[in-house]
Length: 206
Image 1 (cartoon, one colour):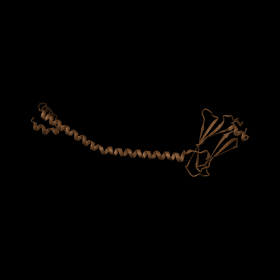
Image 2 (tube, rainbow, N blue to C red; image 1 turned 60 degrees about the vertical axis):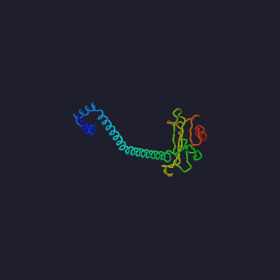
Image 3 (spheres, one colour; image 1 turned 90 degrees about the horizontal axis):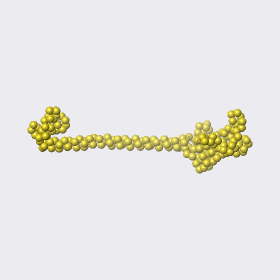
Image 4 (cartoon, rainbow, N blue to C red; image 1 turned 120 degrees about the vertical axis):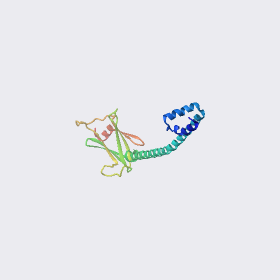
């Protein structure tokens, strides 16, 4: 097969459009004609470079689009996370109460020492009661405050919290408080401990 015919067939051969018989003749010609084989290698290299550049240009807008979408999603998720965190911080869980903003009173009523905690700064009071697993005689209350709603008299959004401690057992016998029985109050500025035996004596319960 003449070189001119091979050169005419090379573009189709590179694109894989020639028949198997033509492919055999072209490859046989390469074995005997270094010039045509060199022309083939050059044409093949140029086509590969063009394809790579074309693919890069084709993919580049999608990469930019993916980056923009990723940034938009990331910003949206960040804003949502901050909004949820702010909501829970300011309107649900709140922040710790200062002891100066809490009025504490206790009385003996209905066989219970009844503690009344009143938040005096106009915010809603959230008590978190924790019972010490290692010592059942120790009860801890953590106080937080928030702006969850306007205070009302129905008790739905209170600034007061009542906590009662029974002074009789299930059989009606008076509970003998020990020196370890206590109520621990955790404020922002300090921790305050009320020993129940001392309070019971003060209220003439024992």
